[in-house]
Structures are given as structure tokens and as C-alpha cells.
Image (cartoon, rainbow, N blue to C red; front, side):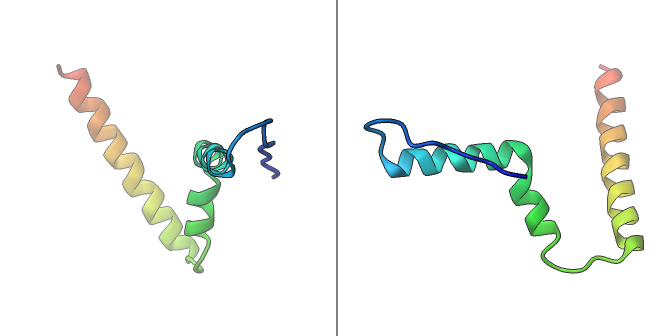
Length: 66
């Protein structure tokens, strides 16, 4: 998994770093790194995924009833 940002001619380094950060956010790299920083038991992973799925289903039902 390689993410590259080439410095454009006359572009400030800060602007290129912002573009890199946006690319990493869009691809979910930062989120994955933060989640994998500590070991998570398989049962905890399943519990977290089920909780997210239940929340998304609740939101979906709420918007369907409108």
C-alpha cells in the first residue's frame, strides 16, 4: 500500500503534506493504523462490527420512515 504525493513546481511543502493527509484519510490508512495499534481479540472485533451494523440499521430505518 503506497500513497504518493509529488511536489508540484512552486508548491509549498505544507500544501503537499495536506494533500497527503487527505489521501490517507480517504483511503482509511490512518483509521486502520489507529485500530491496529493495540491487539484486539477476535470476539471484540466481532462485537464492534455488530455494534456498528446495528447502528447503521437503526439509522437506515429512521430515514426510511420519513
